[in-house]
Length: 97
Image (tube, rainbow, N blue to C red; front, side, top):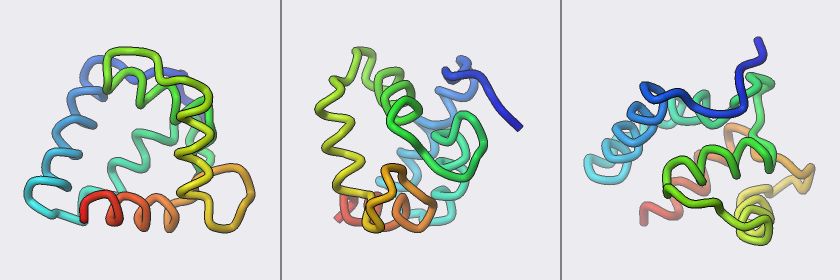
């Protein structure tokens, strides 16, 4: 089911809360919910436009195309140009430390 290209206010608050629970409480169960919120079109992967939209909303400023390419390159271990759920889990855990 396709969704809009931006998070609404409630979804943005949910992303912020889930990220806090994941990083602060080390709660991996939040990763599925986070992935679904990043996957704006609901196709099972996060492409550059979805990542840029969500990350820009989280940060409050537009994330550059180069930064988005770098994020995708870091996470995309099978080199298909998108971030799939297993890749999302790996990169999120790596950044949590």
